[in-house]
Structure formats: structure tokens, C-alpha cells
Length: 181
Image 1: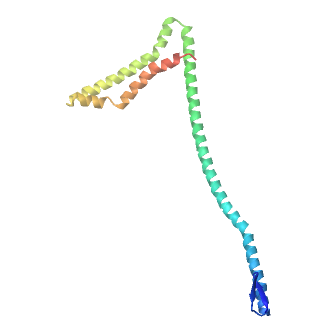
Image 2: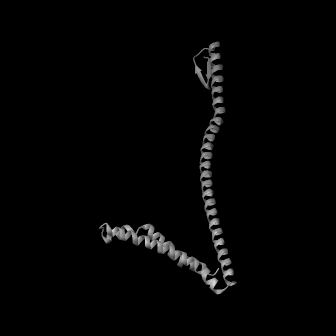
């Protein structure tokens, strides 16, 4: 009995002819080529999937870098705002020093008049504001509206904000200025 090997198995009962030899030759070469090609493609497939993961990683890193740049931009803007505020405070401090030096080197009545400029301006503007509010209340009384409605509509959040701004300037601002440095 003749034996023929195809892919490592022995086929029993087939005669050894040119066709079977050719089939055995092609079969072993074909499967060898096929497996060789698959094994050659395996690293390329791994590289392809690795590149896909690498692209995902790069995209995630780009997103993180974008967020970091946004944060840096916000920090830079806040830093410039703080620098601007410090510059303003330094200018106010220099103006106070200059005013103090001018007042101390002049007559007492000049120093007193210089010290009264800001409060006088505040009193005049606040008096004009109160006059306007009283005028509006008198006008509203002439239309027959109740006192409760007049006061609700006459005293708004803007009025409260302005009063707080004035009080803060005169009491809190002065306390901060007198605080020893």
C-alpha cells in the first residue's frame, strides 16, 4: 500500500501519481504560504490596532492640552486684572501722599479745605439724589397711589446698591486705608 502525506497526515490507499504528488506539493506549499502570510500580517495588524489606540491617546492628550491652555488663559486674565487693581491702588495711594504733603506744607485753612473736597462732593451728589427721590414721591402722591406702593417702587435694588457703595467707600475703605502695612 502506498502512503501519501498531506499536511502531515498519511493518506492510505491512494496511489502515488503525478496528480497526488502535485496535490501534496501544492497543499504543503499553499498552507505554508498561507500560514507564513498570516504570521507576517499579525505584526502589521497589531501595529494597526496600536496606531488606532495611539490616535485615541493623542486625541485625549490634545483635549487635555486644550483644557490646560484655557485654564492658563483664564489665569492670565485674572492675573492682569489683579495687576490692574494693584496699579490703581498704588495710584490712589500716591495721590493721597501727594495731597498730604501739599496740605502739610500749606496753611491750615488750605489743608482743611482740601480735606473737605471729597465729603462735600459726596454730600452734594447725595443731596441731589434725595431731592430727586422726594420729588418723585410727591409726584406719585399726586396720582393717588398709596404710600406702600410709592415706597415699593421708589426704593429699588439700584438705590440700595448706591447707598451700600457710598457707605462702603466712607467706612470700609477708610478702615482699610488706616490699616498699618
